Length: 328
Image (cartoon, rainbow, N blue to C red; front, side):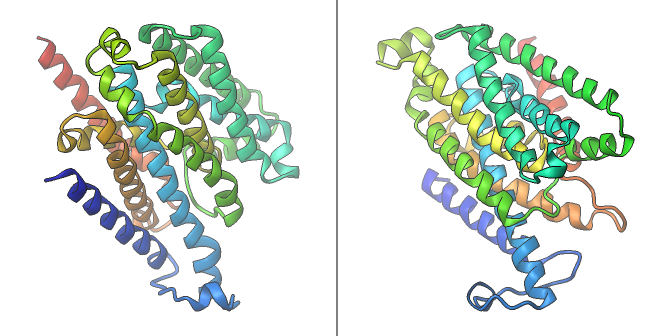
C-alpha cells in the first residue's frame, strides 16, 4: 500500500468513526442535520447531539491524534519502541496538576481550573525535565530524568489522595484519573484544542530530524540536524499536545504506544512518515474505544482509560516478549 493511500484510508476511517460517535449513544440513534448548527433548536435530541456527543467526538479525535503523534515522535527521538508520552513524565505531571485543583477546592469554584491545572502541570514537567537533564543531554539521561519525574508525580498524586479530608473528593479524583470523555462540553474543546493543535504543529516539523536520527546522533549532526533543537521541539510539542489532552480527559494510556507500533511497518519504518499516520490512527482508535465504552456495560459507563489499558497492557507484554526473543 502506498503512503498517500494509507493516509487516505486512515482519514476515511476516522471520519466514519467520528460520524458514528455523533450518531450512536445510550440515548439511541440520533441523526444530525445542518439545522442543529444554524437554527439552534432546543429539542432534547438537538441538545444531546450539540452539547454532549459533538464535543465528545471532537475531543476523542483531537486527543487520539495528539497521543498517537506524540508517541511516534518520542519513539523516534528516544529510539525506543516502548516509549510513550508517559515516559517523560508529561502525563503524570499533568494529572498531578489537575489533582491539585481538586485538592485545593479550586475546581469546585472555577470549573475550568481542572484543565488549566493539568496544562500547568505539563508545563512544569518540561521545566523539571530540562533542569534535571540539561540541554543537549544524551538520550539515556533524558529517559532517566523522565522516569524520575513520572515516579515523583505519581507519588505526589497518591499522597494527595491519601491525605484528602473528604472521601467523596478522593473518589471523584480517582475516577477522573481513570480517563473519560463523558459530559465534556464545547468549553473543554475550546480550552484544549488550540494547545493540542500547537503541539501537533510543532511535532509535525520534526520528521526530517527523526529520519536522520535513525542513522545515529553523529550522522544526524553531520547532516545538519541540531539534536538539542530536535529534542526541544519533540518535548515541548508533546507537553503541549498531551498536557492539554490529559487536562480535559484524565489519563488515557497506551494509545501512544500501540498505534505507532501497528502502523510502523506500513510506512517503511520511517519516523517522519509515521507522524501523520499515527495521528490519524490514534484518532481512529480513540473514537472506536469511546464508542465501545458506551455500550460495554448496562450500568455505569466503563471509563475510556480502563478500556485502552485493557487493550494496551497485553500489547505491551507481547512487545516485551518479542524484544526479549530478538535479543537472544
